[in-house]
Figure 1 (spheres, rainbow, N blue to C red):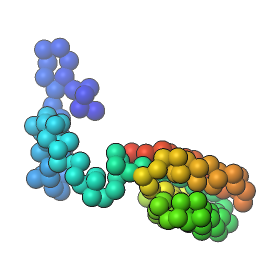
Figure 2: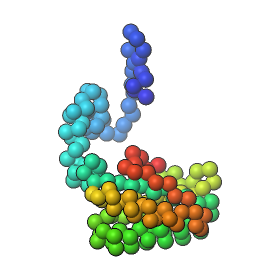
Figure 3: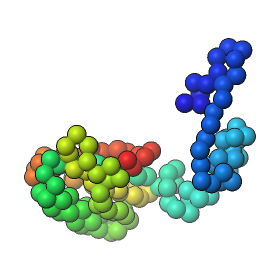
Figure 4: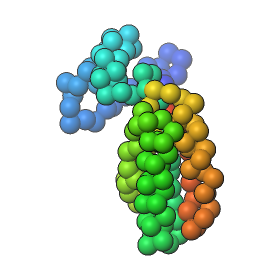
Length: 151
């Protein structure tokens, strides 16, 4: 929204509410210092194995029926771990499945699963194999490559 503030000669104003005003991201945003933010952020991303050093594929899973959906989600998680091991020898990390922060939207119960690794091709192949079962047990699967948020 800050990019929409101010028009012509009229300056804009942005208000950021935070519990951590001293955090580097808040300081860098306040100073309009994107190169400083990049310098602060990149070592953390390397240490935590996040993009651009690693790739992520998020699977958003949903079902109209909670009990059946949870069972299908757990089976999909086990299948993801099996595929990650057999296809890559464990080079792909499977995180989850877990309930989504917004557990229910439009009557659908929601979970998420994250695939994480260096090899894009392997990640895509595993996601593709997991999608082959989409629709069974009423489970809907949406794929998000290098997701920006996990809501």
